[in-house]
Image 1 (cartoon, helix red, strand yellow):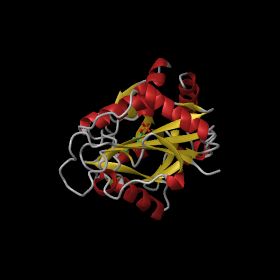
Image 2 (image 1 turned 30 degrees about the vertical axis):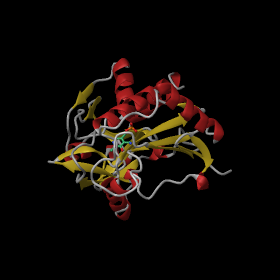
Image 3 (image 1 turned 90 degrees about the horizontal axis):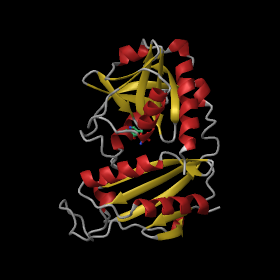
Image 4 (image 1 turned 45 degrees about the vertical axis):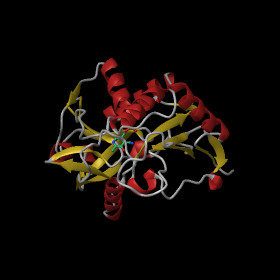
Length: 286
Ligand code: PMP
């Protein structure tokens, strides 16, 4: 089945969706995105993703092309037209096509480019990596300093991911001034003596929607949370380590720079948090 994608108001077969070579997203990485996961045909944490989209757009001085109701309707259409039971919806908004390349922003009123596509991922909730865990390496964080804005300039995270793959690992944890900021595409955590430790929010990291929900669910379950930076050495010596993102939910890390965490096995807190996140976020899925 060919995918149906969304481009500026139209639902089209993917091969028919065309964007200009002068689009600011293409020549300047001048765009923002969101990824919402779908389980049982429903959108997870959707209000959180819409709120962050609005914030990313406003931080870059871009308008929001749709109301929350319109975004929901477009997302639901995409789920229905592509028969998505488990998977993700990718959404991107760019500053549009000024008709030429220029560092200055296009004139007021230049239409933004809005693109959505789906990725069907059967087995997302039953990901076997939740049982085996992943290996990560540390890489110096060389991204720009506004990581709280979810822009499409993903070259450095992509380079770090490739370095991880070349070194036989699954992902990279990025380190700045000796402390872990986050993963290439996820927020990072350690567990010590039952406490969940994760870096506090700032412009240094993306404000993960999965992070926000998980910390709320964990607090409601009376678990102890400490929001502060941690080092790679502390993570290697922790009882457990894990990361969160919309498409991974909660996934365990069992090796960091070659050192095994929890003897290389998945710990009980991570397993419990994954169950908790899936259970609770499904309750509010729409
Ligand atoms: N940090 C970064 C750098 C990311 O790219 C992502 C995923 N897009 C996250 C954290 C996790 O955010 P979320 O839980 O909203 O997917």
